[in-house]
Length: 91
Image (tube, rainbow, N blue to C red; front, side, top):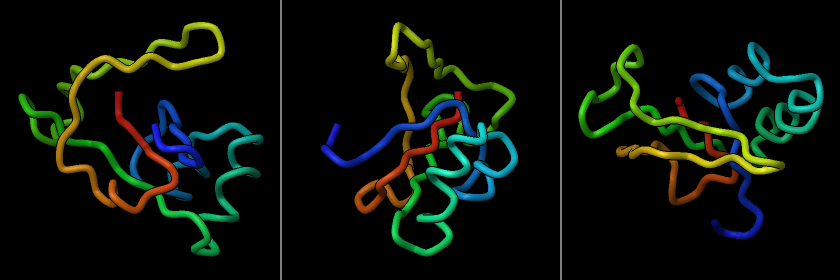
């Protein structure tokens, strides 16, 4: 992981909109302002090799182990990946 980038789980769809709908109060305070101001860019990882963007058939999983998340699976066609500060991964 590149320093300065953050990984968020398990949010849905894009940037500040997904944070507003499913994020905790702490996440909303931390992520919505910089996303809304354009100071941070979110990436969207919604496409898997076997099922495309069919969100009813996701194979990727996220498991919290201690204070960290372990992701198992594959995502492809990650929107904004080269320039993103925050990654939203459907699991």
